[in-house]
Amino acid sequence: MNIRVGHGLDIHRLKPDIPLILGGVKISSKFGCDGHSDGDAVIHALVDSILGALSLGDIGTFFPSCDADLKNADSKIFLKFAYQKLKEKKYQINNIDINIILESPKINKYVELMKIELAAILDINPSLISIKGKTSDGLGYIGSKNGIMTTATIIIENHEC
Image (cartoon, rainbow, N blue to C red):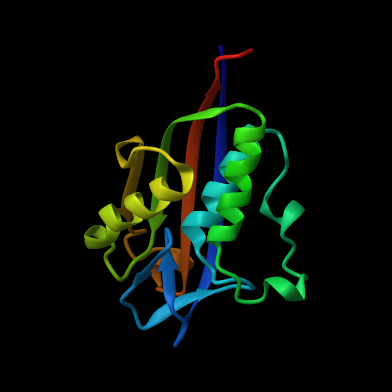
């Protein structure tokens, strides 16, 4: 059995009048993630964790922010791509742990929806995904409500090795 761990991190500036999409779910907020695609910081960190566990680089390796075709793209396409790479290498997801560091809005009421959305794309049971909302207690860039940071850790295994 071959077990691998991947870790991803994503940070975005928050701006008014942009939709806030996290884990494929639209969150009620006056501010959203400023990004080349839809700015889904949860999916971006998760994609980086999958690609990292597979030793394939990061999201920018396959989806560079200079690519005009990706302007406002739905980040779910990035996750579907990473999941396809995982399947090609015959790995299965053991578990996923995600942290969302954001002062507001509070995301607790969206956690189950995000887990369901991500699990459907990754063809796993939502119980294998943990999503936690955190604040930075008013400290720094995130604490001043100007940004968001997400982290994702994944454990994958291949029983054929």
